[in-house]
Length: 397
Image 1 (cartoon, one colour):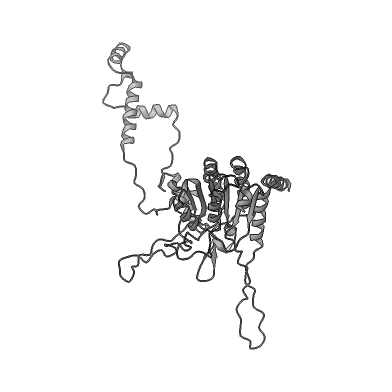
Image 2: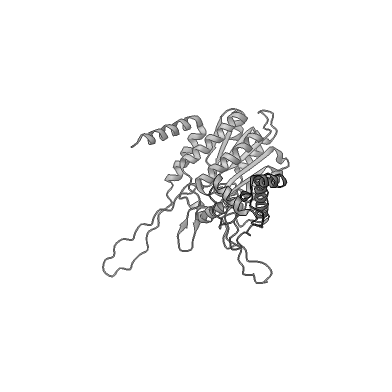
């Protein structure tokens, strides 16, 4: 596909491949990973390396950008980009869920090391950038951490403390005069009780009341400013910095708009390859946290229009940088867990049976893929279609 796009046979392409590949490194399984996450061969990295290779029968590709929008971090692609012999020709961007519980305090059998994290969202990597190798990671907190995220944003907006002092009302001129008069030392003579000559004489020897008031006010204000600020609450928990991005669709669009698009435009690639994972869609089992009792907690809530919007934004940059050359490769995306079917009614002495489990519902996953494909084929048509839909919704009573 990258070959067809580079020679101009196709403007862009969408590759429906299975299994996915962005968790597979140079040798397949990474040394510090538990598994390859269903990945065997890194399709995106292979396409990027082929595009950067020197071939005389097609235009030379100087720079290639890999954009990973899967719910999981593309740790395999990052390893390949980092170990590339010329990483300056590659850009890797990944927006993904990142979450882990605090390390367990219980020691191992040798009592020398911690037993590790109690939980981490797979693969547990992608928390920081690697600017030297053109690697940009945007971790996003899952929706099950929404309360902590809201609290962290509130702490950051209040300067790191929850017990913020209420603001004093704005002082009027009369109030300022009253406070200034109250701050005057009572041991000084009251000039208002003296006659005019004494007043003029005393006034010529002493500074004006306004200057005195100003000096007193300045001394008071300097004294107040010299007071140490109250310490931060020691009981307040420490929150990761990526919590300030928010959660859900808002954090995802914020990452694309403010982190991806400026980086793409500055890198000026000749080809853009998308690692498109639809497991960030609302209700997909790929972004859920699964508990032992069979329940799930949703981590992402992307809608089909979010995937169309992403394709449209990337294609707009591609039209400026590389004549619209974009190759999208399918990564994750599995479907929703349907509600179990209740067992049939019992008759007589029949033993109760468990609810019948159904297969994953892939209808929403398919709709996300269709909308992404529409935005990829004709981004401006998809934008007009979305504007018409929004206008029709506003006209409804």
